[in-house]
Amino acid sequence: MGRIAIVTGGGRGIGRATAIAAARAGYDVAISYLDRADAAQATIEAVRAAGRRGLAVQADSASEPDLLRLFETVDRELGRVDALVNNAGIVGRVARVDSVSAAEIAQVMMVNVVGCFVAAREAVKRMSTRRGGKGGAIVNVSSAASRLGSPNEFVHYAASKGALDTFTLGLAKEVAEEGIRVNAVRPGLIETDIHAAVGAAGRIERILPSVPMKRVGTPDEVAAAILWLLSDAASYVTGSFVEVSGGR
Image 1: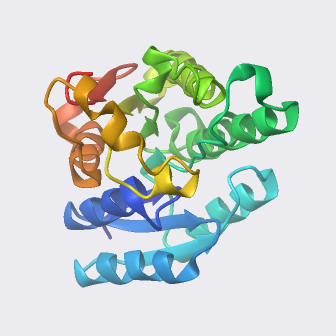
Image 2: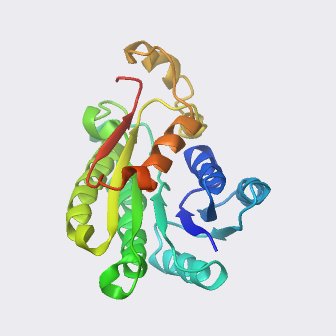
């Protein structure tokens, strides 16, 4: 039996690339997805093509019952999780702070912060040597926005990723003696469909000049950083952040 990884939001973009990279690295992989069952199934087919077991579970990261069901399904179908990638997240509507509603802020925080807390909590219950586990690794997918603030566009999103960064630091220290490493990646401008999905189709072209490398990154490049943090090559790395932002 190989190691088992859970990748939330694994149907598309960075989550899909990470799930496939994990399978190629020898993990059996479970992903969660909100909608687009076809995209989730395509990811699982790629996982299986790499010779590993794959499982897709529909789960809303803003729902604690859904996340509990995700972990319970993985326990039953694959086994005890060794690696968690907290990737599921939403950007929210393009808006200045003076025009964003409390409901919009709450939704972003529920998915990007509370959902990650709950998923990590369930992973720690299974990984912690204090609870009979054999250790493991958690990688949170943050964003360069947590450093940049995303003014005039996504301050609410940036704030949620700032909270995720603090969570990464605190949890890493809390479980370091229990065999669990907790780190994060901060992707910058990455070529995914998330920009078009929130009505910011021209954002990449507009921001690209501010990227020192003068190009966008790919989901595979982010996935490579995530897999390194999960691997034994990063065995003395915890509470750390890997910037995947082209120097921005």
